[in-house]
Structures are given as C-alpha cells and as structure tokens.
Image (cartoon, rainbow, N blue to C red):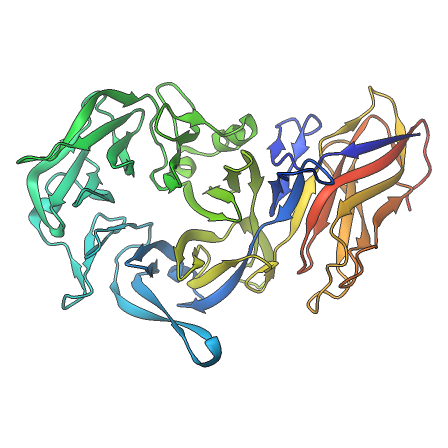
Length: 495
C-alpha cells in the first residue's frame, strides 16, 4: 500500500484527449503561498456578486459598457446611459441610486472615454454622444460632419488632450484639443507599414497604438500644426487583433485576442516590448473551436484584488481568466434561469468591471443589474456559485489498483446561517471523461475545524483515474491538496 499526494493548484488544462489531461478549475483560482505553508499551491474561491440595484430585470436592458468619469461610475444598460450615485446616511448606511441621463441607440457594445470634462460614448452603429455635466442638455449627439467624414466611428481613446477614434475605413480621426464635439475631416492618421484593417486603439505609456487585423503600429504626439500624431518608424508589432472588445489594460500590461499573418488567434500580453503569447495550448484549442464571428465577439474585463490581477475573456461558450500573479488560468461559470425558470449554466455573467467608491462595480450580461464584486460572498446575486476542480490523472504504469481512502485537504468548520452543515462531493472518473457516483461528506458546522473529509472504499481502477471535487453551498471553500492511499491489485467495493 502506498500514499500519494495530488497537487490541486495547477489551474485549467483540458486536452482534447481527456484521458491525457482533464484538469478544470471552475470558480476557483490557484493561489501560491509566499512563505513555507502546508502545501506549495492551493485553490481559493472566486469573489461573489452582491446586488446594488437593478435598472431592469429584462435581457434587453443588459449592460453594454461602463466607465468612471471624475470618480463617478456610468453604465449603458439597454438603451439608457445611467449615472450611479452613492450616499452615506445616518449610522453609515450606504445607499445607491441611478440617474437616467438619456438614450444611447443600438443594442451592441459601446466604447467610452473621457477628458475630464467630457465623456464620449460611441454606439455600435457609429453614432457619437457627449455627456457634459455643465451643459444643457447634458447628453448630446456629436453632429459635427467631420466625425463621420472618414468612415463609421468604432472605438475611442483619449491621449494628450485629444480623443482618437478608429473607423471602418482604415483610419483614426482626431478631435480638436479637449473638445469631443469638434472634428476636422482632414485630421486623421492611417496605417502605413501594413495597411490592414484598424481594429482597436489603446494607449500605453502615453503612446498611441493602433491594433490592426495582423499588425500593430505606434504613434507619438509631435505637436505643431495639423495632425499631432506621427508614426514611430521601425516600431511595428507583428501581432494584430481579431476581437476589438477583447483589448484590456490593467497595471502596466495590455492583453487582447489576436493573430499575425497566417496564424490562428491566441491571447497576447504586451508590456512595452514584443507581445508574449500567454494562452496555453488548451486555451488555444477552445478559441480555435469557435466560429470566426464568435472569436470576433470575445470580450474582456479585469480587476485587481488581494495581490491578484484577473483578466477575463468571455466567448459564447466559456469564460477563461488569467491571473498575472501566478500566470495560471481558471474558468468562471454562472448559474442563471431560463424563460421557464429552470437553472442553466452559462459563461460568467459579468460584462464590465469598474472601480469607484472604493468598490468593484459590475455591469451584467443577463439583465440590468449593477453589482459589487465582494470577497466573502459565495453566490452571484441569489444563485449559487458552484466551485469544482478536477485533478491530473493518477496512473501506475498500467497496473490496476484500488483506492482504500481519499482525503481532501481543505478549510473545515466553514458553516454559516445560510449553510449550517455544508457539503462537499467527490466523484471519480475511471476513463478520463465520465465522472460517476458522487459521494458526499461534510465541511463542518461553524467552528468545527477538526472534521476531516475522507472517503473510504473507493473501488478498483483498471489503469488510471481522475478526481472531481465540488462545493455548491454558500460557504468559504479553500483547497490545499488531496492525499490518498492506493493498493495494487483487486480492491474492495465502494462505500
């Protein structure tokens, strides 16, 4: 009989051959200790969502974009621009309310930016809107003919007192200084080194980058009369962008989904030099399984909390999250209700994240709710946040073996009033794909930290097996590893 320890903190790596690798990490993220600890890796639960208010419970009112303007968060939910105001009342009671600022046409994603005095919003039809707190009316359409003179506007950034807007005619137009209402049809730049489509702009260390379909060019402000931006000769990135809404800046990094010439799309990280591919081959496979339209619609969001920078990429079938602290990937899924009231599992419902009022506020992809990302919340609004992980295969050189005992090392005694006696489930796959016979143990009532989660008489394995551990109660879940005993030859039944 031998003892084996299985590491649980490796994150997501699911091969297209499941017996080879079927490691999933859903609503849990790897966390590595920075000092000697019980294990070298662990898994912590992702933060839950707490509702602030709802602008509507209808799907048509779901979030299309959000932005923080002079410390105040703004959300485009459905066809309305909302300002979210916060107040602190008697006894420190915090309350929120929204102000309806006017209509934003369309139904797709919007692009937003500001210069400190004006907030610009471009809808998916190329219409521009300006919100100015000191103007009457505060929300106005951009009517200057120069705004539409070089193609349909798409995405906007702000740099060095100028709004820069990309269009569908391989150009980027430039506003008058500090005035998003004034546009000259002659003030534009275009890709020169490789005149491919301009997909999205971003600003990095006060330089302007134009992400093309296959390459990226860099511009700097040289001042003077006329167009103030000039391309930096010799500084062309050989990676482009295929999903304009996937471009995400956090800290001193920019990430996006893209490709170069004759390349399949992958996920890139740029920190000032050549972009580095950060998606694993398992993530690449999931991207390549999507249609061209599905890839182009991938969107991203990010936030930083407790020393971790999380950057999420959501497609129609999944949400994968990269953590810059560990360079590991994990998945996030949401439980929602269909039109008949039945629970369904979907990619993460978070659509956008902004930081304001010392909180992380989120727009929702399912309806018009506005929420908070909260540590210590173990659900998403009223729905469970189901966490599970699967392990790397246990294999003994082709020998059959039995499993007399399996113990999951985790926090015990985590019960609370919402879940006084929380459960943990173990399943075993003996073919690498199908998990069978879930069996339950208990995590312990509040304070019962000595309880152990052990499963005895786990049956015989002919060649290899994979384990799956699940927690769905509204409780803290922290995992540090698995310890098991195995014995070669025939084993006893399950119990």
